[in-house]
Image (cartoon, rainbow, N blue to C red; front, side, top):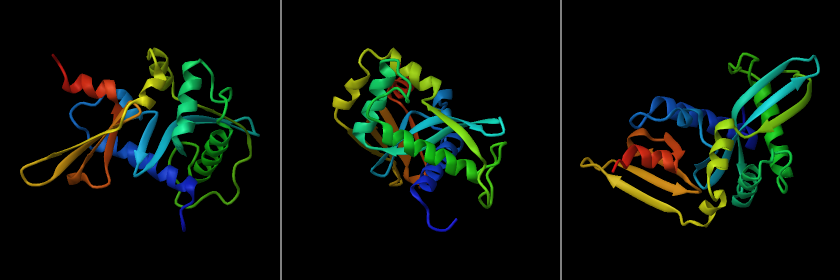
Length: 207
């Protein structure tokens, strides 16, 4: 594919995350984890996942699930605030740049995938004629945010990091930020799992 653009990187990170969740399960993970959570960390970068419905000029439609876009903490906060107020992404203030990047990424993914969802070895020489795109958070994520008493409170809580070592020197690292837990294992380099903090606690705290 040559040099990776930002859009290409988001596709790569999204696919890697989904593969990690499916192939490297820590115990029995809930279905929502395997589908992906709203946000995830890749290094120091923050990404949010979203769905996109594409309507082509010939009248056909396709849905892209769990595309990813890199955002700042402030942009992520605006997305959560909008969802908590019952607003769609299009109605949310202060995220025009995010919407533009989401649609740009969706067009890039569309160029590199077939309509059945399989990946192409080379991009389409002539991109499909797109009439419009509609981007949204996943239904699971919207429901989760609206159930929270104070969705923005997680932005004021400190980050937490813990590394647990095995006898052989390998380790598992648990990071917490913005209400999400990220688990990585040195035995599985390059792979990680993200899940909602409440889901994480429900699997480890039973008293």
